[in-house]
Amino acid sequence: MNLVNLTLFLAVVSSAYLAWIYVPLWLDDLDVREALAAGVGQLTSENSGMDAPAVQRMVAARLGKVGSHWEEQDGQQVEVPGLGLDPDDVQVERGADGRSARLTVDYGRRVKLKPLARYWTIRFHTTREGVLKP
Image (cartoon, rainbow, N blue to C red):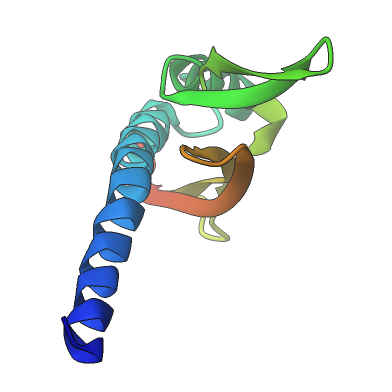
């Protein structure tokens, strides 16, 4: 085995390991995008429908069923379901024209590196925009 083959082998193994860690997080982020899109769909004009706090609660409740996150309990790291986001973590911005809105969630996912007892945090910034219903 020469140095080029060893380097290529290590590159392939490293890429597969990173994909094994990152792909489930990416799939969970697709669920976050879907929840934000549903939230934008529920936002309506100021006079009717769901207001911003109700949409924030709805999106946070949906995100409570997506993926899992690590929390420290009794001095040990424990994996618990959901992303661990509060309704305040969902930002709602209305456009200056009053006809558009944007929902944004910034969150970090801690990942346990399997053969090691180390954790790595991956940051996500997910945004969805839409036109408000009349």
